[in-house]
Length: 246
Length: 231
Ligand SMILES: Nc1ncnc2c1ncn2[C@@H]1O[C@H](COP(=O)(O)OP(=O)(O)OP(=O)(O)O)[C@@H](O)[C@H]1O
Ligand SMILES: [Mg+2]
Image (cartoon, rainbow over all chains, first blue to last red; front, side):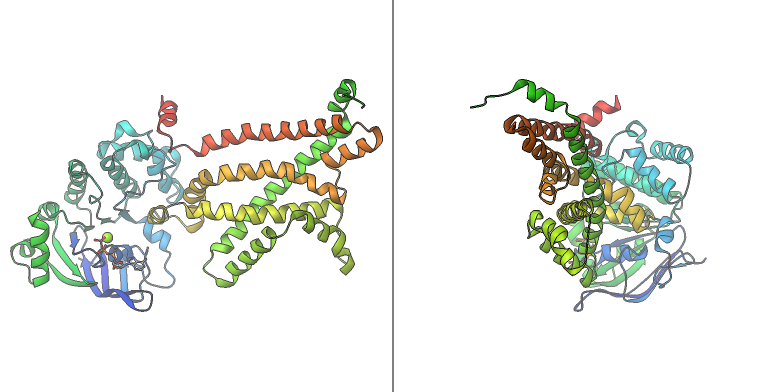
């Protein structure tokens, strides 16, 4: 099957001296769930932001489906409208209600009518279990609720793939499950997903592969069972023992 | 001692000559603020632009305007420039001076409003596929507005009063007309009190308007007000 997301020898620098990504390569097939983990500062967020062009790269090639991300003539807004992204700090639009948050991309970017957008929004709110909160503002919601709205906002665009950057790491422990449940359901429905997370329970349940990053490099890219049973690199072994301990 | 003349006071309170002067003050303020906001946005965006030249020009402009008194600028524009062949009417000179000033002060206000919107917001807007213009219009500007409105409102209040400086180049606004009448009628206190009352009326009216605007842009930030609205 033709790959959905391709990263090929991606290099990225911050400034002249600091290379965040060192020749990173990664392929995600349609319907695959790839979990990315690694120590803080290893470049996970940077890598995932390169996939939808939120961060420019200086070397290598990135493509999503048939769209080149790294080309000079790429229409990034168009590309991004097909790739959903969920952030660590939710980043809902605070001046808009929940419904407006989910509608704005549909009406302004996809050109749907207000009625179409609202119907879609109602269905998505039902799906993430937030129907009762349609008219609230983000500030009135808990972290877990905000993150579920952020997922709905991304899904409203009918994305061909979803990117998650530590979607649960800013949440209180009791809210993590409600967000992971939505993500598991999404994975089971066959959504292509790249997920930066340290939730190894989630990885065990739905990941196809686990990518381990350290110092800007993709150190390991292995099928999930292999990764948990016997990580190849010493660095991954150390990392795993650290996060599985506490 | 002449004492206070009530009849004279009430007569001038409804005098059309003074009333027209007040209308001119109001008109100058509306024009200066509207053009000032537009020009201020341009200066703010230049100042924040990654191109060094643009941001340096913007910096120089605000430095120059904010570092010199409006009174001096008006005199230079109206009385000084004709010396090198550049002539403006009183109204033109007044508007140029006022707009240049508002643009300089407002650009700083607008800039800090825009910078106050967290970086995550622009990433989130881009991630749903918005262009830079859409992001500015639907996401950044409305959030920046909440921060900008209170100091912007102060500027409107200030501008209503600052227009009186243009009386020095014989702009026929409220203060100038009051002075003209005083020359004729010698009711100094009564007429200045009338003028003061008109200024007060206009600044107070603006206060009320400003509060409504603040409430509009405050939505999503005040839990109690939002909850009441949803009922
Ligand atoms: N805008 C930036 N300018 C300069 N350096 C940056 C910038 N953003 C990130 N970095 C640096 O790049 C490195 C990788 O950052 P990144 O956020 O991708 O790491 P991460 O793996 O997501 O870490 P974490 O687990 O803490 O989120 C870090 O050393 C960080 O300090
Ligand atoms: Mg990160």
